[in-house]
Image (cartoon, rainbow, N blue to C red):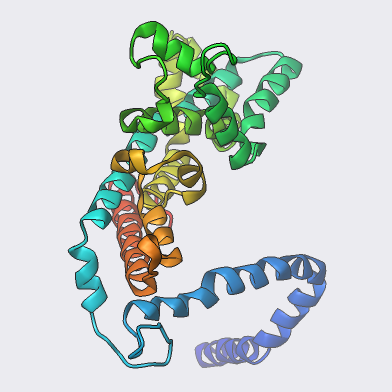
Length: 332
């Protein structure tokens, strides 16, 4: 009898293995509309994320004329060594790391704080209006945002108009002299960049945390109230622990982007006078590719971008491993 049961189990497993692809095909046909909608995303990912990976070879190959060729001779790690000896690269690397850390320290908690505030608004209509207003900056293009900043920091000649709002404030406090442009002062670039970035992204970033707050069972708050917990204690002992998995995942993803500052906003705001604090790896790579000083260096720019990607990958893996060990929550 035991042998018959065992044999039946083996037959069932063989049947499942034999009909595996048939069952997969049926599932695909059943939801074919969803997979058709997914196709444009897959094409986009392949063309703009996976296909360009072959360009990494530019950091290791070149031909005798100095023009990068994907199938030409192997040149080893020469450009990697040149990169590590380039003072401008290390300045850009430092600025990238510092700007990202400022964004992590000051920008990461604010969406969480906003989500907690939104959850305390009892009127659904008023909360919706406030949330929509906080989301709006995210939908402004980078050009519009930088144009607003430029206008606020503008300097007008006497008799030809008034200075920008920020310029007037800085002049009132004596932080700059009359006629100075804030955007040409390297020490003010980081505050302007970080504050404008928080203004843009904090409202939109609060959506995930607000959803995590709404997912918490009301009975947990009722039990805390019965135990005598006030509002701050409810947030500390109920809300934040319940949000911990979401916070861990979002923090891991944010750490992975520490060295991935987008170059659009930086390029539209920085000037050679602010390279000291504004130049980041992405803008360094861009200048190498278009030919800084009249001569492009694709190999050096590719090596810088490759180094940036490797560091970012290590940060994600390290943060994920630490989170899995400490809180049993991880991205993968």
